Length: 235
Image (cartoon, rainbow, N blue to C red; front, side):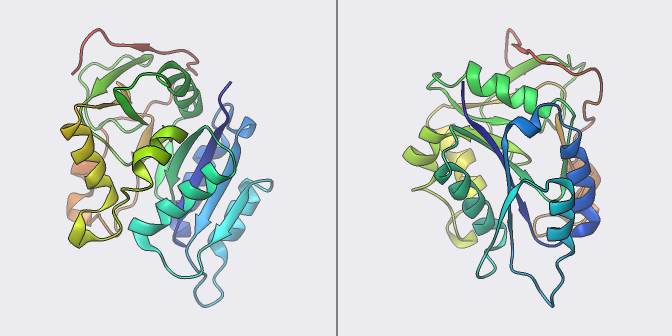
């Protein structure tokens, strides 16, 4: 059985973070995993986000960066710590992305189902649009979406960690992932029915004018699903 960890990044935005934590707190099976969060440095003694995290996940670990790492550095810190702690597969969440109650079931199933498939680079939970989605079906896509995703230790060590994109001037990490997936003809796994939703109206990569257009059409909130199956063809 794979050792699956959940880690999050947070930059002291409690107005979003509390909703995110509440969504994770009702996720089926999440308490069987190692939970952690990587925080940016506390500013002006404002520890609201850290206190919220400790309230929802009192047994969860967390780290605080010595200096602000930003949206390009903090995900690396969170993933690196989770894999260094022994995880086989790590799910990366964000402080402005809520999740479905069965999102851990989805990741656990996909992590096991595709762990030996050399074509699969990562498992993504955010599906922008899929016509007539089936709650228990997944599909392959030659693309990467950074809203709550996960990958395996070998992918982290072999390609992701040494090729991380730290600067916008030299292609940020998620853009590098998209390029890598396309250049190597790899795929990511997606649920037909999105298991995550971006709620941050304003942020480093989001403006109010873009917000609605970049949200998923819908996020699943129905009966818990434990087992999934791959659609017979790509979208």
